[in-house]
Image 1 (cartoon, rainbow, N blue to C red):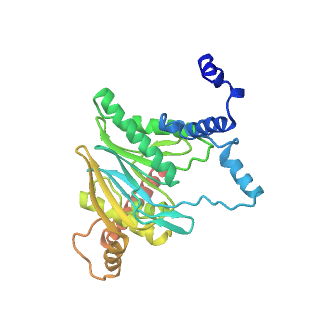
Image 2: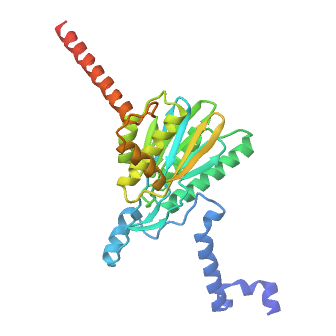
Image 3: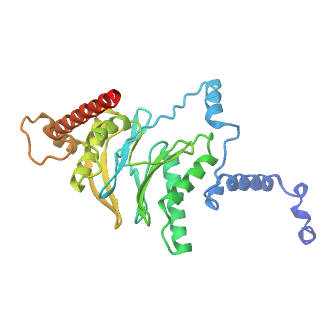
Length: 315
């Protein structure tokens, strides 16, 4: 045996015991499955082509039921005071509520935040990878990463894994040398700049409130009230949203966690407000008197625009 070891004969496959070959095979499989430990961009792919389409066929053929249902409500908007992000905290597995304390707003650095919507595992993993890259960028170049660069990095990752079953829709909000920015990125490789975004199963209800109460010259308190009210109404209509409403404010001084309020507490506030018949002075921009005033102004503007069109046609 010593001569075999000296000559290297014991390393040949036909000279090794069967259990040694099994151990090598297991080690190789473990290395492939955990390749992301050394390279976070390399995940083990499914053993068949086009997983997003073929997985459904395989499950149907095997008579297995696997419904990848997910739901949430996140929103963000820009205004004169910076950027506001707000999200609920409910994580669901189909009809089962898995958690009521999920943190769907991730702190990437002191000046940038990201939101989670879609598959919890996908969102949490890639947000951690993005936070790691943001920190490495600061260490390498002695400056913060630009919000556009972070969004482009996440967009490239999503494009590389397109069609592999990645389910993710996130917003990146932060302030850099070019000002405050709000960018939407999803698992299809889409990257879009905007002033108002809402992502998730309850986004339609949240956008209804945002479309009514949003304007650029909001004060900080009005912006906070608008964001909380939009998420609250989404949680009332969408069964997949709920829990704690987390509110963040970002400006050129960094981000701040404004409040973390339970939906039941917001219900006590906003439900009493909607049922009250008295006009409360100095109400935020989503109160009934403010909304009625806004509708009157919009009606007058529409009449003026119609009159201008008639004059233009006569000329």
